[in-house]
Length: 119
Image (tube, rainbow, N blue to C red; front, side, top):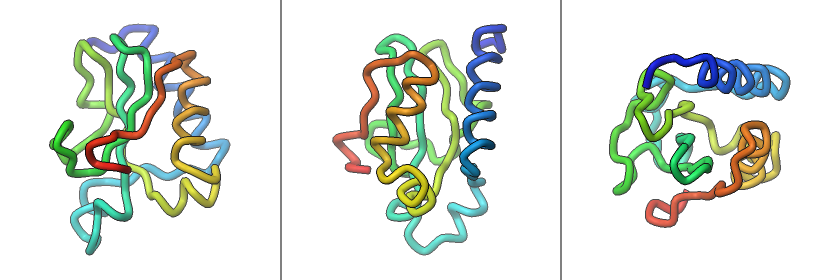
């Protein structure tokens, strides 16, 4: 997916949202150095055809690729990155609330947690 003006605007909107709420993105090193990455982290995908924000554990049967970030954009959408479950729950009350707020920012309605990996 090329970095179109629309995609660039979405990314800048998300970065501003994360900065306002002191939300950290985590790297592959953070994930690999963690004893239980699937219990401590999750990743978010913006899915354009279905107009939604979807969360997955780092290792998920639906989306098994561990590395997630802006560089993984496809024609269907793009990965935002990895987040700490504890940080998001402390800041937003729940992962679903966090996902819904991101969806609202981007005017997306089908915002959900992956049912297969049970984020």
